[in-house]
Amino acid sequence: MSGHSKWHSIKHKKGAIDAKRGRMFTKLIKEITIAARIGGGDQEGNPRLRKAIADAKDVNMPADNIKRAIQKGTGELEGGQLDELQYEGYGPGGVAMIVDVVTDNRNRTVSEIRHVFSKNGGNMGEAGSVSWMFHKKGYIAIDKSKADEDTLMALAIDAGADDFTSDESSYEIYTSPDVFDKVLNAVKAKGIQTITAEISMIPQNYIKVEGKTAQQLVKLMEALEEHDDVQHVYANFDIEESELAEAVS
Image 1 (cartoon, rainbow, N blue to C red):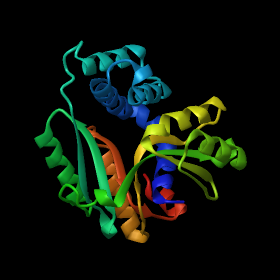
Image 2: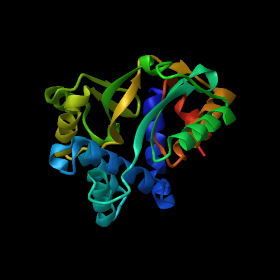
Image 3: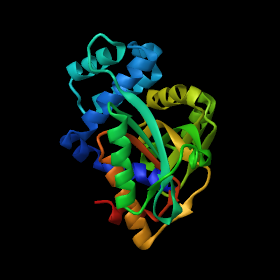
């Protein structure tokens, strides 16, 4: 399994803890606001907003919080002045990293993200320095216990998926961004639970990390994701699942 999939599996298991800390609420409110600003407040015609609302409901965000975030995005309420930015850099072991942020203060955020990189054995790069190593794709991961492989593969391909892979513990479905919603809806219509489902930056190749380098890389990724402005962290690493689980605090 790629580091991409393993990292999502570990984050999924930690999700309830993160939600209790309030971190997920902060990030999802920003995502809802940005999605509503870009695509409008009607979730039926805005797949990104629909996904953000579904994620918010999954962590039991109150309906009033969701409504206010949408209204800030559409301009009905003040406070929706947020910028969506992407930073690039390298982690320990030369691992390429992309960091998506939503912020109300560009200067503060870039300074803080640069500090997180340098403190944890990485460094920020120029725009375009690593993004060419990734493809933007829809990504759906499903635990093997939740679905039959042949049935799921046929369902995904019929719905328009580009690729379907599996390993010892999970299935992975890859789609073009424009058919992601259709494929995800087809999966959900069969009552199949996902580990994660999102438009993601998928690495074209992976760098194997282990030992102290792996531990340092995980610390960097955790530090980035703990920052309130960071929405997503993508990295082209591969790591043994047991080692990843041990390194994650």
